[in-house]
Amino acid sequence: MGVDWTNLTGAVATVIAAGAAVASWRAAKSSNRTSNLLAKIEKERRHAELRPVFSVRCEKYPNDDIFYVILKLDGPAGLERVDTLKISIRDNKRMPKSDPTGQRTEQELANQIWAPFCFSPNVDGSSVDGRSVPYADLKLGDECRFQLQRVSVPSWNHTGGVRWWQEQGIEPFLKISILCQNSEMTPWTIPGEIETPLEKIEREGDA
Image 1 (tube, helix red, strand yellow):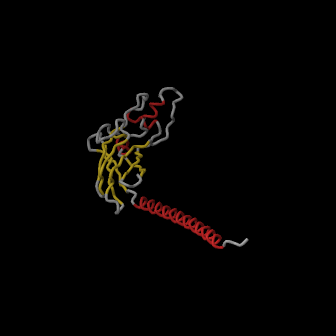
Image 2 (tube, rainbow, N blue to C red):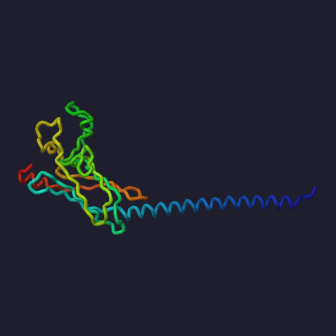
C-alpha cells in the first residue's frame, strides 16, 4: 500500500501551522503581559511623582480661644491642583478599646478624639464629631484654613479640666492625615504632624 504523500504533507503543514499559531499566541500574551507591567510601573511612578506636598501650621487668634490649621499646597510643580481633599485628626496615642474600671463604655472610647484639638463641628463643612473636614479645588500655591477648638472634656473625666488630655499622656501636638484625590488617579494619603501654640500657652499659664 503506497503512502498518500499529499495527505501526509497537508497534515504536517496543519500541525506546523497550529504550532506557529500557538507560539504566536504565547508571544502575544507575553508581550501583552509585559506591556501591562510597564504601564503599571509607569502609572505608579507618575503617581509617586505627583504626590502632593503640603506645608501645614497651626495658629491662634490673638485674645481669643480660636485656633486654625492652615494648609498650603506647595508642590510638586507638575501638580496644578488637588481636586478634593479631606484632612482628619489622628489620635496622638493608641488608647485601650475597653475600660476595665467600667467608667467608660467602648463606644465612648471609640468616639473620643485623643488629641488636644478637634475641628469645630459643622464649621467649614467639618464632621459632627470634629474629626475631619473636606475641601475642594486647592490650587498650587494656595492656602485653605480650618477652624479648630479644644477637644471637650470627656463626660467621664472629673479632674483634668481643659488639660484632661495631659492626664492621658497626650502631647500638645496635632497628628493629621490628608486624603487627596485627583481624577483618574489613585488617592494619596499623606500623614503629618503639626506643632501647636499650646506649649507656649502652657508656659504663659493661659490654658
